[in-house]
Amino acid sequence: LNIGYEAKGQLLASNEFDDEIKKRLNLPENKEKIVEVQVKNKGNEVQVIICDEGNGFQWAKYMEFEPLRLTDPNGRGIATAKLMGTNVEYIEPGNKVICSFTKAE
Image (tube, rainbow, N blue to C red; front, side, top):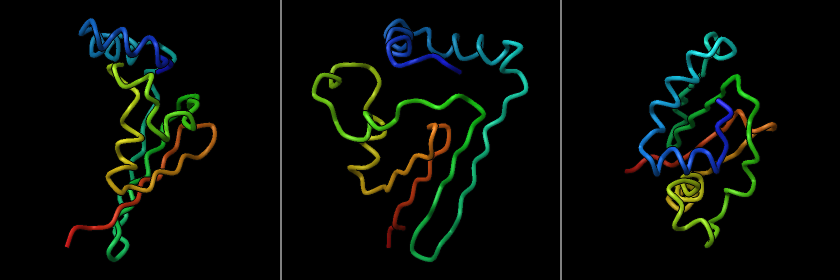
């Protein structure tokens, strides 16, 4: 929804993020957009594919923890998923992600 990192942090800090999402979802340019989610069971692995109709984002800088972002209210989810053993692969321009993880035994 084209919020951006800095604006998202400000909206989260002021508890206005949910309201902003609702507002942007109702804008004419967003009303018809969809998100497609696929879950694939591949033996001992689960793959989740998420693709939206947005412009994408610069995902590469969020693949690892950045100490300067540790106190931000956002910006750690991707790196956290990777630390938990999830393989995270973005497809350019960053509006599609494939997450794969091993099933717990």
